[in-house]
Image (cartoon, rainbow, N blue to C red):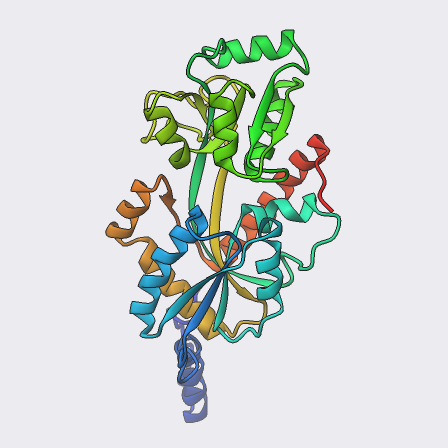
Length: 335
């Protein structure tokens, strides 16, 4: 029973007890108010990837709305490097005063903790989750004239020619690299990983026939598919993607519950005052449920999502365990 909404009084209360009850009932309302004067200066949101990346584009959309709602400038700062670790470390060591936030991803908060022998931050202890913001799913691509005509052909060839097929990615330890490792693990096949410095370089070599296949975020894949340079064999969402309705999902093709997405979310340094946390959670929920924002993210190939801080924390724990299994199975490690 919720004592703040249901009162069962067996006898009249004296004046002191009435005052105590009234004060107790008022406390939740007091606790939800942000500290007086916050925010009184610009808020900085650090992104661990470069300008023009998917995390950067999405966080700039959210920052613009946050600035309008909070009445204070909200600045996005790009600090790329070490698959997001440089930015994560900087925020982890910042004051938990609500003026420095972090746009974390499945890379910084699910994959890197298992991929690196030692991280300069603890993704659980050093961060306060605020909300997940959305997900982007991936597509499995081959060149348009590839002898791999569909997913079943790929599986048959991989089993008949162990160690002879190859898949590209934009770098060791990226979620797209590990998506390929997850596929290998589920199929029990040996496909060679070929890392590149950028996704565009990986696409170019797959289109040129130097590598057999590549996993890519669906929004990044669409231009290559539409131009006819690459073709999509499958997507990693459980159901088909509205952006590629003609392409089956791996789940549909027999890999039961195979789902891999890139996700992002907003964090603060651990120790953020509860009133500020509640205010940010409230404002981000309003932003992420706004029909205009949902539509804008949809055009970018992302699905808008939101969660409570507690729900987001539990999601991160489950994702950490899931990616730990993939990292361990792949043998991938970064220094």
